[in-house]
Length: 117
Length: 114
Image 1 (tube, rainbow over the protein chains, first blue to last red):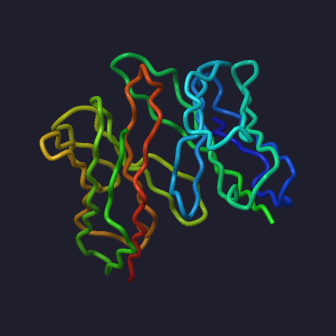
Image 2: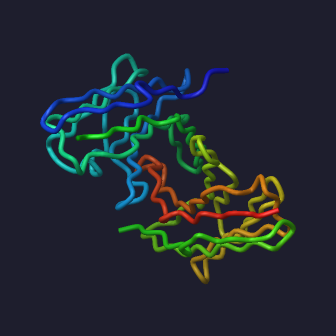
């Protein structure tokens, strides 16, 4: 079956512009996660969705970052007024709903490489 | 907060050598532990996992044992191949009630030479 897909695969944008990154999770996966992979910070958690709600937004680095999820499926991560330090690979992952006593595998997409010039 | 520390790379080995990558963690709860691998040009994929103390995860000849007393989850492989060249990430997950978000170590790049 299809895995997690992300688009675009690469995005180059000018400082100050807004960007939208898209994630299509595996069908039936109600949990969706965004992570960021950068040279300076490694792999870091950004936000977690369960269905359409985001019970944990603790990793979003500033209020320029926001995300939404609609229909319990597709998610969009939006970065406003991009800065050079936003340059990174943005990874999306999905899994079955976390349940008491269970830790389900997260399946990762290929990522979106964002370069802010 | 939760954190994961793993040995820095790069680690360069010859084929058929023994590989160990150390990983230790701090966590407020009782986490599940994972090793993820990122092959060149590919996405992150789960290599193995362990969900409770003394569990051993294994896959593709790799093994790691959940040691609660030493808060460690070291990755080992007895005989590496060139195809094992990749970046390896140790990770822990928050409890299900906190959404299972992953906390990663810094990654260890492994290069296996023929």
